[in-house]
Image (tube, rainbow, N blue to C red; front, side):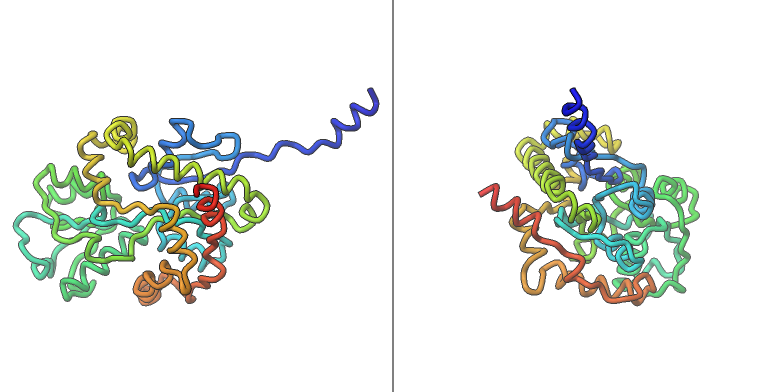
Length: 313
């Protein structure tokens, strides 16, 4: 009995699940699908949905998350602040899912001169606005920027307070349904809006098996989404307040990366992700949103993706 008690006292407590957070977004839904269809090891990984990207960033800064799905620009800003993260997967790229919509009376970008433009106070919102103004040949002093949450854009457009809104799916679909039209989207800014999976450096070092389980779960969720998109859309669309049809339409505006493609983005010499982000980094620095040039050798870790690819082959 004494020996048994000694063994019990010395046994290590169970390792908690790796907590991964994300805001509600179609591009992150393979993780939701993996969780809901039990395609991810829930003993190893806990998928947490948060109300906004701002909340995800706050939880990550405060140590409440071990991992997160973020946009690349958000990741670069966190790393610039000193949060020790590693990008372990490139998930998808926006190919029209981020969009600027305008009053139908506006027929060209040049007509935005003097107009009110609604935009959320996020890095992606600021980046979309910057690219819009560049395409229009305008500067911020040429327009009236109104910072507000995306959910308020429709009322601001209807009241005439603004003539344009920097939006994204699924909110953009509501604006279209109300009669507003697309004038600029993320297809015109390749490499700028990319979703990545980040893990705290400490978690990656100490809990690599859980990180591997996270990547495997993402890949199984993505495969399920791509093999039966309509069935997945019926399950997932209510969570992002879309109809099944609108959900499927939003999927068409995202380019998802396979494990092999993600590995190439992270491990080529130089990494494809780094090369594609050169303009993004320069813009963020010009906007005062990045102080230093990213340390890509430290930030990118292709080893989990490499392990997953080897297991899959």
